[in-house]
Image (tube, rainbow, N blue to C red; front, side, top):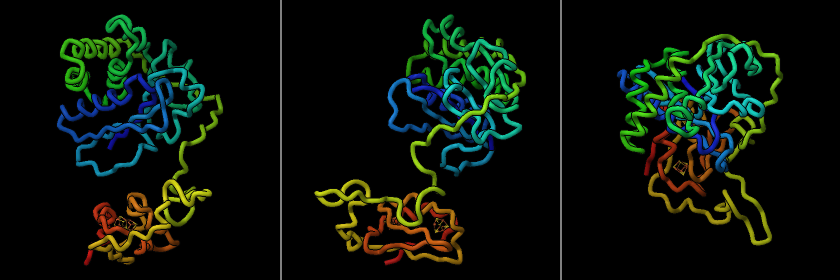
Amino acid sequence: MYEVRFHGRGGQGAVMAAQALASAAFQEGGYATAFPFFGAERRGAPVLAFTRIDDKRIYRKTQVYEPDFVVVLDETLLDTINVVEGLKKDGMVVVNTAKRPEDVDVGMDIKLATVDVTSVALEILKQPATNSAILGALAKATGLVKIESVEKGIMQVFGDRLGPVIGERNAKAARVAYDRTVVGQTKGHRKLQAAKKWLPDVKELPMGVTAIPLKTEAGLVGPGSFVENKTGSWKVFRPEYSKDKCTMCNFCWFYCPEGCIYRREDRMDFDMDYCKGCGICANECPADAIKMVR
Ligand code: SF4
Ligand code: SF4
């Protein structure tokens, strides 16, 4: 499986780039998924989008934490975001910049490709929309997909949404960026400080439920406020858990909409006072360790 992480800013179309790349892989007979990660962003704020490509069905649904390739649509992100976080050592970064690869410091010795995608977009699209052209650079630098497939992917995703004429122009921008891409190597000198995460990751969260209520004078509010109102009697089916089958992957804990699954040291516990019997935990469990029973 290949995993690609796009770094862009809200409004730059990183999500459409991820989708067009997935479509390109699909044109070549592969499987692909594409999805974004938004925090409380507004236009201009850093955003992430991801594409996974494989020759088998893809079940992984998480964000991409250890990408094979990183694509940076806006070079100013390099000042504030550790874009190479988790990047595999034999991976590659593709950056939209007028600089040569050896002059771009991402804080790591790594293969790096550059192309001035903003200029390409201004020439061909008459606006600084870099999300299609950068895919041409990715195709050239990594060989992950052919440029012809990228053009088809762009035609499909951009053409469907913005019309065939705009789709064709974006495909052309990708081809021009492909021709102008320079592939090289960079040496990382700069020590980048990882930006504060929006949310704690799974290891940082306390053992127990996902939802932590907030106590106010008016009572409990926000996620977890259901603790004052036992909802467990709503259910028709309840989860039956098998510790022997459980691999402690935490999927059930993560997906339970009620936050009523506890992570213990060596097992999961289900709080029947609050479980509504939705069955999501059983559905998501990859080890078949949960069955819904009357
Ligand atoms: S059945 Fe639904 S509410 Fe109950 S533990 Fe599973 S996911 Fe949570
Ligand atoms: S999803 Fe299944 S295997 Fe994973 S922790 Fe929950 S019960 Fe265990």
